[in-house]
Image (tube, rainbow over all chains, first blue to last red; front, side, top):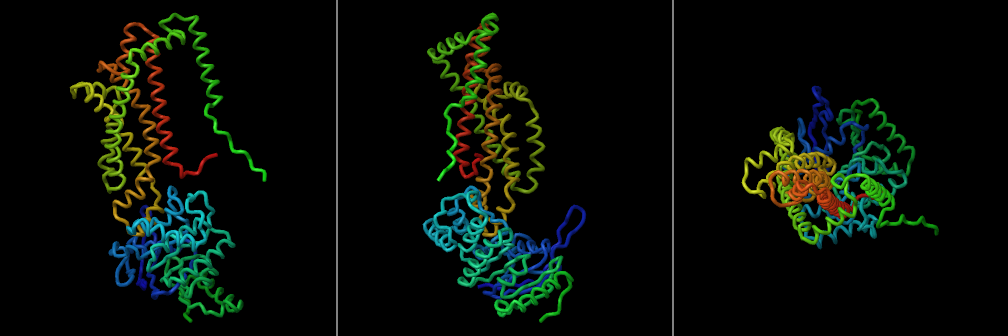
Length: 255
Length: 257
């Protein structure tokens, strides 16, 4: 199990002749085995942060460290350790459901028999049995996203990242998928970071919620109390605090 | 349950038969009013065609011409694919290579025909060089575009799992560019047929181009037309072959029905 540490992370993009700051001195930590939701306005640099955690982009300043190593600089160290579920399913259109689910395992050079067995097991858990030979375009959005989740879990990563994974699904499908996802995360005890713009989703999924401003920096870091499940009043109060923090775009008092 | 019937697969397309029939009919009617060396009747062209088939030249010369086309195009494809992939994946290579590729692409096929005759000895070498020169820029351009067009989302998803370079190439790049590659083949085949005929006409003593020239010098219009037919039919057959490959390789695509 792995721990994510983010220290004074800054990311600046060049846009033509001007500069655009997506992340400004972002600091936070995610403990091993913790499920943390990150919430913020759309376009607040959450996805840039995700790409830095995945090691696909280099931070402009500051450090992003997982188990003492930086995903960008020690790129190959993280082989098989990171997985992501993206906003759009990002399935390979020319591969069937089964072969999409084996994609990551194939990269890790798991022998064919083993990888088919593993992929089938995950597809079954996500309710996709019987669709192994379908192509992505033949499935609904919710089912495609399930294949994406199966692919992410298939390699049994240390860290699981989700970027607005259920954002474009209809509410009923999203609720069901969220519940299934949560169960799998709990069952496999992965360190997970769940990025979303939906405050309710953040409160439902995260044990802890990080609220980001725009450009991305930490405004609030709160433990989600378990009472919110039973007390709508507590829930509403927490939600309004998060909304206030996002609206003011100023770091809020902790507590 | 009342399901909508599936659209029938038609082996022969009626619209196509009507339009082709109309064309042949007007040809036949026109041939009654025109001298034979301008427009011979269909039966004469057919006769000539059968004669060529009996003598064996129809088969062997057509085969030779097709062989020349494919040999050259495969060479052009290999060179073009190599350049296209290099330009698309290695930084800055495009800036160095594109001007050269564009310059070569700007040279007309006819100029190349003259150039290869002066540069090389032997018909086969000349035609191979010609085919290579006219086809590789087209292949490298379309493959470069295809490599550039690979989905950034899929690339990031793949890279997140830390694949090796070969894996990226085999699992993402190659399958992504296949549709563009097939389109490039279709375009290039049509182009190559035209160029190879000119080359055979100017500098060969075998092949469809040469046979056409022979018939023309005998003022035998039926012969010229019969060879032209042979050429058109083989061109269409090659296109059909690529289309078949396309529907086989791209069966994952949503059908447009």
